[in-house]
Image (cartoon, rainbow, N blue to C red; front, top):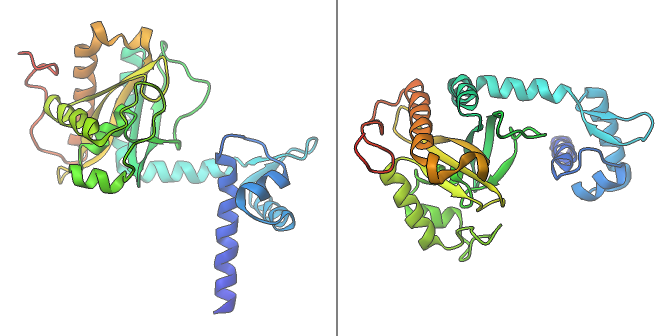
Length: 270
């Protein structure tokens, strides 16, 4: 039993070392890793050496700094290839990004955050980094609001128990009553929007993805700078495109419920 406990502790510590690299900086000193993981420097150094042999971290021979190893890409690829939403959404999202020239993103909910399964960047919305694997708040994003459409108001308050939700910009929805109103509107029209609630200068249009049981299991969005999204003139067209793409993914997952395409997303006859 003591040996098993020691082994479990070693595994937990190794995971804490790997997670130290997800906090923002891609290259770290041993002391940085030790501090982030809450470990002693000698323990962190020993774990890094073991992870280096396994290919999960790489050490720069000149600077001595550590970074995540490429062998982790193999594991990540295997995870994504086995995920049903990723399989159904990948080509549809890629086509959407190419057609609209905007970023196309698919996310699932992991506890109280959204988790990006994939993203493709369009010509009007380039990024210098990959969103896949990153997390964002639910209440301040169109993707998050779409994911929250699958919960009742009481369930949303249990999931996000703060009386005042975190504000990221002056436009962030920070009260549950306001969030309830936003989600009620999203459910009525089949899509959610977010304008400068998480980051200034950016906006998105999103819709929920459902599985064969009708449960909301993921969400799809198109995003980009305000100049490219331009909801004042493009909202109806973008909403139609996002809803159609999300419905196609849902059908691929076995959903046979009512589609949202019979009416204009803004409530006008098609």
